[in-house]
Amino acid sequence: MRRIPRFGFIRSVAARVLTVALFVGAWVAPFCLVHAQAQYFDVPPGTGAHDVAPAPVAGGPVYFTEQRSGRLGVLTPADGKIDQIDLGKGSAPHGVIIGPDGVPWITDGGLNAIVRVEPRTRQVRIWPLPPEAAGANLNTAAFDREGHLWFTGQSGWYGRLDPVTEQIRVWNAPRGFGPYGITCTSEGQIYYASLAGNYIARIDTATGTATVVEPPTSHQGARRLAADTHGRVWVSYWNTGQVARYDPSNGAWREWKLPGSAAHAYAIWVDDFDHVWLSEWSANALVRFDPVSETFTTFVSSRDRAAVRQLAGRPGEVWGAESGNDRLVMQPTR
Image 1 (tube, rainbow, N blue to C red):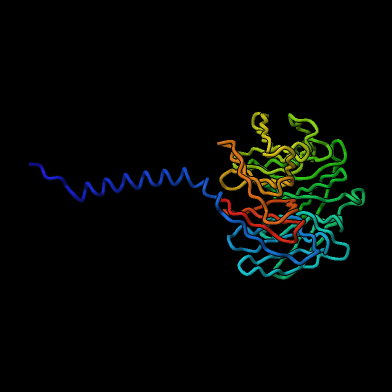
Image 2 (image 1 turned 30 degrees about the vertical axis):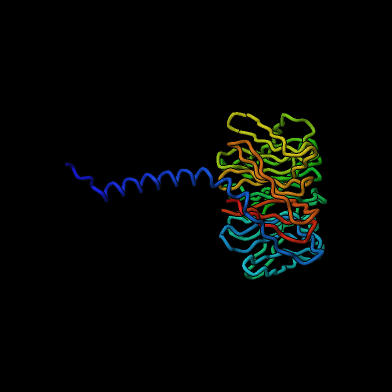
């Protein structure tokens, strides 16, 4: 009689069980975040927390603009401690991003200037816009691959700062008022959205020329943009409560309606799994969209009137400022 190699058989069965477990785990994992609980961090009352930018390293500081107090807030998530850095008299900061140098860069509507902050030394550098762009109503910024900072102004402007030469140039936007969110794709292309103009535009980074790209839905209120790992541009529609995807490689558009009868999509961000996150004001919630299954998952805030205006994140986390509640929110993405 042939003897069965007991331990080899056991190892074979164990390997098969492990393979099945890994497969099932990989399939189930995306759905587990339904049970993940958001964390909230109170900020000083009345400071007007607006946009947020977490440092890329897990557990690192989270920066946010204090639009009413003219400061940059710095949250340490581990203990909830908040530091505040004054940006100067008349400051009313709107957007904040982390630059290639690892520090916050701010679009400051009150100063009508681009501001760079070195948190360690608390040094603040200011680049005022040219006189012709007075009252630009600065909104948001994004860096291109060459290290140039591109920015939008809702009064009908977009522009570029070269941090090396310190030269700022500005251009009149097509259709005037409206430039709002802006992003750089994985292919190095710069796009911005025009809320009042109801379009998105690609900026030629060499010439500064903006070319309008018309969304399929008219009067949609394109508000903010985010890019995925495939170089596609995702757009939040404020007026019609939709999320849209534009593929520059072939000019194709797709659009999806958010849950609810009167959705208003404001902020948008794409995580490291290419899931799309939005803030939805009518539902008082953050919403996750899975482009593969084309399904939405809603995470309602624990307080009314959250009013999240911008989303940003790092692996495993999406962050926003609840401007209506004087606090920041972190929703786990996994």
